[in-house]
Amino acid sequence: MSFWEYANPRRFMAFTDRVMGPAFVLAGVALSFGLVWGFFFTPNDFRQGSTVKIIYLHVPSAFMAINIWVMMLVTSLVWLIRRHHVSALAAKAAAPVGVTMTLIALMTGAIWGQPMWGTFWVWDPRLTSFLILFLFYLGYMALWSAIDDPDTAADLTSVLCLVGSVFAFLSRYAVNFWNQGLHQGASLSLDKEENISDVFWLPLVVCLAGFIFLFLALVLLRTRSEIRKRRVHAITVRERAA
Amino acid sequence: MKGLLQRDLRLAIRAGGGFGLALAFFLIVVILVPFGVGPSADVLAPIAPGVLWLGALLACLLSLDRIFATDYEDGSLEFLATAPVPLEGVVAVKALAHWLTTGLPLTLAAPVFGVFLNLPSGGYGWLVASLALGTPALSMIGAFGAALTVGLKRGGLLLSLLVLPLYIPTLIFGADTVRRGVDGLEAGTSLILMTGITLGTLALLPFAGAAALRVNLR
Image (cartoon, rainbow over all chains, first blue to last red):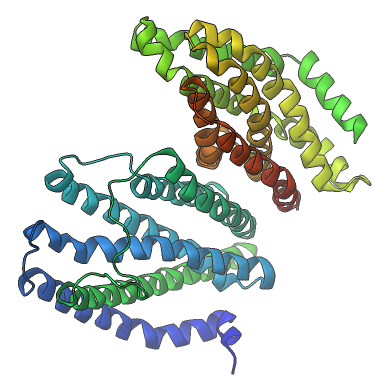
């Protein structure tokens, strides 16, 4: 029994049928628990007041926005190397979730920035690199929807994802060069002396887990519907030929 | 490969459109800017480096879809794919031909356009140097984008959406070089970083472009 067994669509469907429900439940429980805990049972920050609480949406969505792209990179590589269709479809299914996460991170940041920094938007390196990431997601999805043949589309978007990853990484560090930032540095790292206080940290971890489960559930749901769409397409083609 | 380069250059010059059009477009962008922001030298001088780089970048974008599209339509791209030259080499040569017909003229004309925008005197050398070293990356990235979208009916708009985000690092360092040169700061660092990006794209993107072409010719 190896991991690659699930490259078989039938196995994948059977397995995800069992996994998807619990993932949705876990996401719902963790998110409602974490958000209620974070919003109502944590103290206000000494300086930021109650605005600090947007952290429970902002940080997990930003975290997911980056990691979903990494997941798309991995699944694209799997498609290019091993030609498993499920992998390509998972990358396709993840992109709209990723772009939504990027948008949530940008918008919660803007809502927080207005009272705290006095502006919705500054050309800060972190903000700018997220905007660039947003553009990469848009281009990737546009290329998927522009090509009719599914295998060609999967190949070309995978190549774009590889090249785009390199350039997204380059841009991430190029913008540091270009402007100084307002955004605070990392305060969640595991190896640092000075980090965020546990009072905020614990509900944040619960929210992070909720976002991860939510992504898992959504991407499985979307991959399953992509697979079903393929099957329906195959059936209609066969019927037309008969 | 030399023959391919000569053929592409000849086609670009004689068929019209490619060669002069990018320059004319660059000129128009540069002329439109003072209408938008006002003619005062105090306003124009600080934004001149960025506008010149943006103009060159957009002018470069204009002729990208021609790199492969015409060859794809008349079938000569399939001949090139089966020819003894590696397809990676074809992509690189095509990008080189594109650079010779757009990037190089843009670089040579940029100082003249800099005068229109009151570019301060310290910036001219850096402008030419950064464009000369940066525009090859624009052509190479563009050739990759063109290879991705060659099979599409209306790939032009999609091509811009795909290629422009990839231009960001080059634009950042290129415009930064000129700005630092104008301010009398140390501009070499940006120039070197941008050249690094250019060399990286020249080394790697022919492979990505050839992979995309193979998929499209399948």
